[in-house]
Amino acid sequence: EALLADARAAVAELHGGLRAASATVENVRAATQALPALAEDVRRIIRRLDEASRVLPESAEEVRAVLEEAGVVLRAIEKLPVLRSYVEPPEETEPLVLPAMTSPPSDHP
Image 1: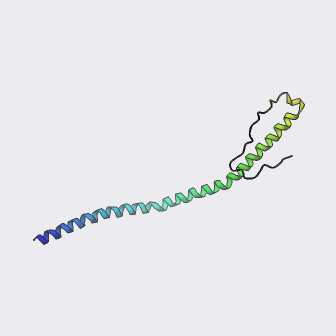
Image 2: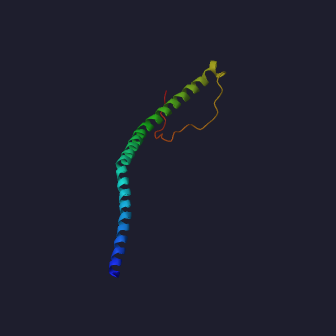
Image 3: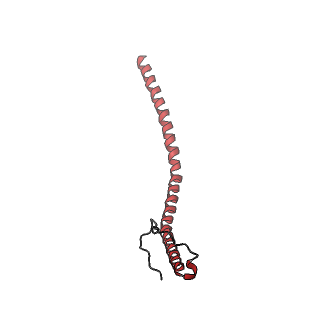
């Protein structure tokens, strides 16, 4: 009888362990079902970052070129005697350098 009681206790303990393992397996299954959608979201984000990284250097170059041209125009206006009295002299400042700018500014005529 003691042997039978020990066997029943072992079976009950095993049954409890199987229920706990079953819940864990169900959690893992649910998580793995979400993985494909999560992976697709990550791929989409990577594609968007890749596209942005290709556009950003071009945009930075365009901004630099516009700022450079604006500087040329302002310097030309400052030299015109007729307009000189209407234009305040600019403050001495450091030139704007964009972080993405890798090439030195070109000289525009």
